[in-house]
Length: 78
Image (cartoon, rainbow, N blue to C red; front, side):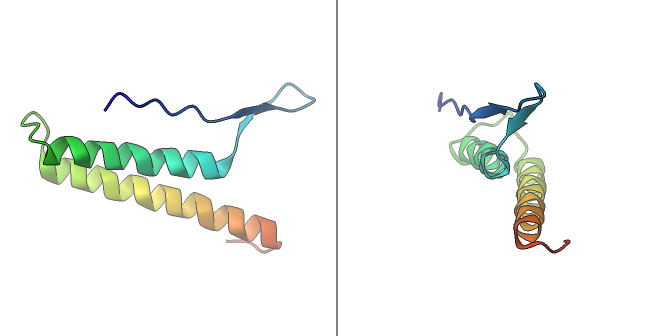
């Protein structure tokens, strides 16, 4: 516990801020994993079923980001 995740930020020539999609999906999975760790370490203020559901949804979102990036880089649409 207490780990910080700092994704690299990229600013393009128009001043737009970007974060690499791989870092976003990794962060989503890390958040879910941390929540599960808290539940399994005995945090009784967290509902295990709710944490499990939220973790699954974060993983699904990370998967969708990964699939969209793969499709984009291969020139097809997801």
